[in-house]
Length: 538
Image (spheres, rainbow, N blue to C red):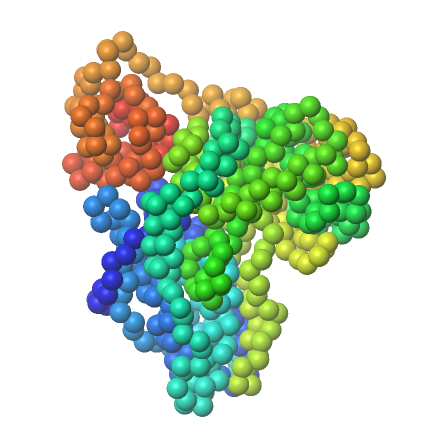
């Protein structure tokens, strides 16, 4: 076993990923991966030496997550050499790619580690595929670009047998960021930002997306997806007529997407999650780690605004969010205590992302041509996600929907509806959003949002017992609940989150109950519940 060097606080984002892993263990949902197609004469030992240096430089790549008392902590381990065995693969590049994708779909154990794995496959004398897979708790999409850049810089001196101290020394490590983040929160530096978000999101209800089928139990996070290519000309025209200036292509697409969501759900209150890189300090830009944050932007479509007015509101809300990006999404959830549904993301059920994690088409290093290739399919961390990439007004990507809720037809209609709204708005920016054509709004869903909500939140039968536990399980849960919440007594009809609970405390209840021989359904515990409701499921 590798020696443990440090035990340090986990970041808020790492805490959330640890919690999610407790909900659905042994899942590859939070894996990040890149394949590197290597053409030319490869020195495997030099590649291993370069990769060893990268892992040694970034402590987070030698980190695991554990529960210590009531806190999730990072345990940093001593560096070890990265050993690469060249594997010969029959079937050419496609066969090697299939093997790499299997590696990318293999789950990690956050407590055991390591949380990075590599595999080197030879498909021809001068062609290899190098797969690198990491858990999201220690690396985000930006980190893959950092890793590739460093690997490319370190490989040539490794080939020449030279010292590998060619990169600038890192000023901080990821654990320093996590400690700084916690300190800012504890000392009240984020209070003004939190006040803004509380004002924006107070009494924010969930977006009730009309699903095609009722979910059954824990989501399997399978996907249906459809390509989306918003026409650049339409985006350019709408940016030109927006008198406020500084309207980005992303804002135009967000306004169209919000229009589709409002028309599809019949709701005027729409919250869309926006990813934020989270590297607000220069010294963080060269670090591997999990920095990305989710900003839940709330848009008001009441009163049937015209599209141009909505676009101006989108710009205002986006700028407001980008100026206050440091409150972790996990903290917002625990502070605002939104309505929770088992297996579903609170505060926002949908995300719109434009990729800013740059990976080049190809690089050269010591006579080796390095071409990044994708390994992972689209993932559905939210019920509906729009992923876009590109530069200037030319954006393209896909819509990704959870397949336990939606059919392929809905994905196709959603992508077509965004383009159709853009087309109508570019022709008439002053048109009310209700008048813009939207194919998805014209279709009757197989299951109504009201039916889904009823199925997920149907109350369990209760007796009038004055809040006293009456069964062995209720007594046990009452004691555990009081212990975790640090209170003297808890009534069996008290709601967990309303009485001081949060996600980490909910998982602690599960783990303590497991120690005492009672297995609780984690997905139920993380939704809104009382002791009586929870005990009835055991």
